[in-house]
Image (cartoon, rainbow, N blue to C red; front, side, top):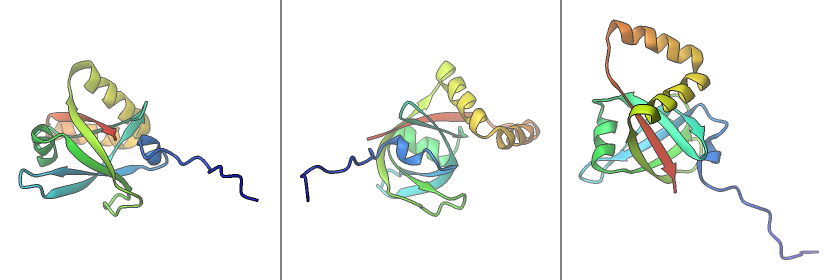
Length: 133
């Protein structure tokens, strides 16, 4: 017998990514074309944190247009779920250090290894907060 009640549906926000190691972040060029790249991420309080080289195309596109889409993916960028509209912004100061701490906690070995490589060829990093709609 149907009662008219429906099962709760999980929100399409950051919790949809909780059990994944990678997300695909699609940022948009000035002409509107999307560019998707797989990245490591950490989630806290519904916000996804990622990092990239400060002079990367992704960071330039986000500075120009904060609209992004995110989806869970594998390490090669093959999408494993639904795209979610989101807003991104570049972090600075204490917020950037907090994002780095979250990523270090989730990827301790990988981040240490990349930290070692960065000492050989240093590049400034940009930390990005992504808030799913």
